[in-house]
Amino acid sequence: MKIGVISVQGAVPEHLNACRAALDDMGKRGEVLTVRHLDQLRSVDCLVIPGGESTTISKLLRKFGLFDEIIKMGSEGTPIMGTCAGCVLLAKEGGEQAERTSTELLGLMDMAVDRNAFGRQRESFESPLTIAGLDEPFPGVFIRAPLITKAWGGCHVLSVYKDQAVMARQGDLLALSFHPELTGDARLHRMFFDMV
Ligand code: GLN
Image (cartoon, rainbow, N blue to C red; front, side):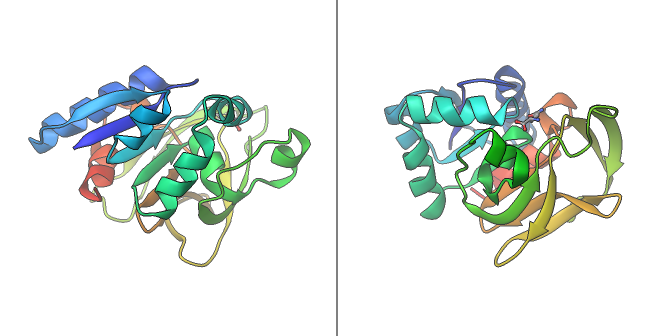
């Protein structure tokens, strides 16, 4: 299994480590590689889009010629996990903030997000989350996180925080508004690899 981590900006090394830890836990052999070029992208079996700054990541995906190929791969069944800014990019609708910053979204998932939904006062916090498919709560690390404000069609909510959606799945696409790669807990990376 070849796992690609989009490496244009954001929490890349943390995801590379979490992917390797998940593979080890599962006793699976696999290769985890950074993706910055089209040939690298085309070679992977699944893809992680990390957190960071969604406007910047979006622009860099265009600049490096990866944007349309990610849409193509995601539509044709390549599993993709987007965390935080990656979650924003997977959405079809990015709300007022995405419009104001002219952030082009990949639009692969039937969901709307609200960027920086927790505002400035509570930019970052941690909270245990109940997640469909996990027996024990998962440590949710939220950093200037988005919320999933609407899910329709084939998009299903897997976790909520205070009645608002923070994780969703559509086919083999997984969107998390928090940062599993910063927790030392590889269960959600394992959940993702189980889909591959
Ligand atoms: N607030 C950022 C954005 O909307 C996401 C923050 C993050 O990925 N930690 O792009």
